[in-house]
Length: 79
Image (cartoon, rainbow, N blue to C red):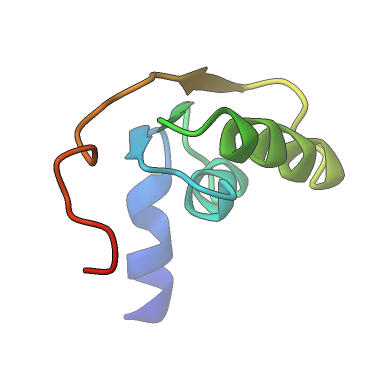
């Protein structure tokens, strides 16, 4: 059953929104995903995910995008 769960990424297209460090997309690529797109609204997070992909031997095969957003601007500080 565990092996079947890991196979869900074989030849899959993966979109990781709010990718942060990129760990989920990197794992998906290592488990056989065809295409992986990592998206975050934080440019530093995208840069970190690129470093992590290179450290995992995946400099190619993952698309990284920073998409600025103001979606959190209306949330009061301290909540």
